[in-house]
Length: 461
Image (cartoon, rainbow, N blue to C red; front, side):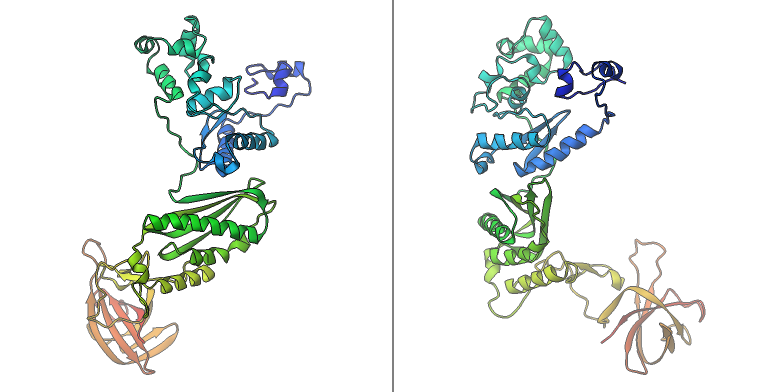
C-alpha cells in the first residue's frame, strides 16, 4: 500500500507521497491510514464550491485540490477585498481545511500566487506581471515534460521565460507555454465553468449578522424584490417563477419558490406570495446570505397592466393575482387553463396553457354538442343495441342499468391518419329515464351484440 496524500502533521514527521504505508508506520506507529477513494476529491470540491456560492454566483472546481471563484462585483458586499478574502479563508480553515488563497486579475495569476507566492495574497490591479516574474515555471500550470525542459535550460523563473522571443518558445515548448503565459498575464481570456448555472436575473443580499427570525427574513425579501423588480421593469420584463434562498451559517441551504399565471414585477403581490411560505424556512443558527432568483422571465408590455379597468378578462391584472394567491395556498396544480389542440379524439383535443395570455392556435369546435364533463379516459360499459348504426337501448355503468329514452347520433370521429391500427369511434348523445344525458361511443365497426366494444366518455349538463 502506497501513500497518495499526507496532511501537514504527517509531512512534518517525514511521511510523504509515494512512501509505503509499512515504512510510514515505522516512523509513526500510531499514524492513521485511510483508504484512497479516487472519486472523493471531486465530490468534496464540488460540495465546497456549492458552499462558496454564498460568496459569489460563479464557483468552479479546479482538480485535484483547488477552487476558482469569480468575485467580480462581490467584494464590496463584505466591506472590501481584504475582509472578503479573510472571511472565506477563515471559514474554510475553521472547518479543518488547510487553505492557501490569492486574489488577482487573472485565474492563472491567482492560481500561481496561491501555490507559490511568498508575498501578499491580494494582487493589485494590473500587478500580476510583477507578482509572477519571481515565481518558478511550475506556477504556470505546465505539463511535467515542459517543466523538465525548462529546468535543463536553466530557466528557473517566469521572468526569464517571459523575456524570450515567442517564436523560440513556440518552437521548443509548443503552444502550451505561450497559452499559459498569456492567460496568467491577462492577454488571453480563460473561462470558468461554474458548478451551478447562473441565473441571469438574480439578486444577492449578505447579512452583517446571521438572521434567525421571520421579521429579518421579510426585510431581506422586501429589499431583494424591490431591486429585482426594478431591474425587470426597466427591461420590460416580468417574472413567472421566483426562488428565495437562504444560506445558513452551518452550510445548509433553505429555499421557497412561487409561480405566477402571468409575468409580473408587482412587488407587493410577489411579497405576499412568498411571505405565506416564510414559516417553512428553518434558519437554525441563522442565515448569512439571501438570494432571489427568477429562473423564468417573460416580456411584459406596460400597456397590458391597465388594459382592463373594470370588467374582468384574461388580461386583467387582478384576475392573475387572484389565481396566483389561490394556487399558492392550495397547490400549483389546482387551477388549469386549457386551449384547443388539433387532434380528432376528444381526450386529446385540448392542451394545458402555459399562461393566462397564451393564445389559441385553433378555434374551439362549436358545431357539435360536447359534454360539460369529459372523462380523462373512456370507461367500458355493457350495451344492448338492436342493429348496426342504431343507438343503444340499454347500458350498464358502474353496476347501474340505464334505459335510454332519447338518442342522437351517430357522429363518427376518426383517429389521425398517421396512427396505424386505431379504430374509428361512433358517438351517441343519449338520455336515460331519469333525464341524465351521457356521451357513448362504439369503437370500430359493429361486430355483434356480444363482441362490439362500447364506452362512456362524458356527461352532459
